[in-house]
Image (tube, rainbow, N blue to C red; front, side, top):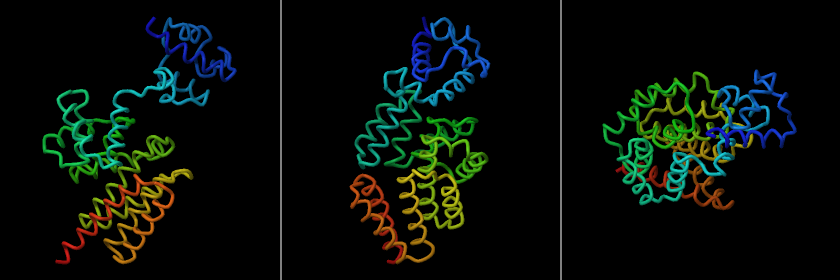
Length: 281
């Protein structure tokens, strides 16, 4: 039975939450329909499944992990590997991901995401990404993961289009942790990119949008935003003050043992100082 695993998992969750088959009638799911689903005889509509899971305080993502015995989908695992390599500054791993997957159509965009963290993308790769993202109506983990890793590599015109699109309804992403973290990562990289391009108004706008997305527990994203804000201060307001703030933040990260985040931001700091020294020569 194709649906057995889905139904069995749902059944176990329902029992765990002490709910009966009849408790889902208010969602338009009859007792018979739910029984058939749990016994692997049929599926229920995606929207109703989503609502039923919400009734049990379970996200679709959590549900998929339970079904797959805690194993993430292949694409999520790849993005996780990319993220770890990025924070560890492991260019070799990123290169291997690119080389191993760029020829596989279903993983090609993920391969670009890996490459974009250590090298410029070619015009064809950027065009491929933009064609795909242009057609996105509903942004999920896959699309936001692409954006978080290499959104800053896209053309300026397309980036403006993306920002307008995503922030036409920011609450759709702000309320979901996974989405919020990825969107914040994109904004962080774009603030630095706009600073490097001398676009103060654009950088300031994204700092403001970033602030709107925060939830109380978003500590890491607040740290990165603080760094981006100090980077902005160094670039456009007061170089000495911005430098002092960045160094203070880096010291704090070392003090609490956040070594990989420290190393990542330290690379940005070092690059910024080198850029400043070149401009003064």
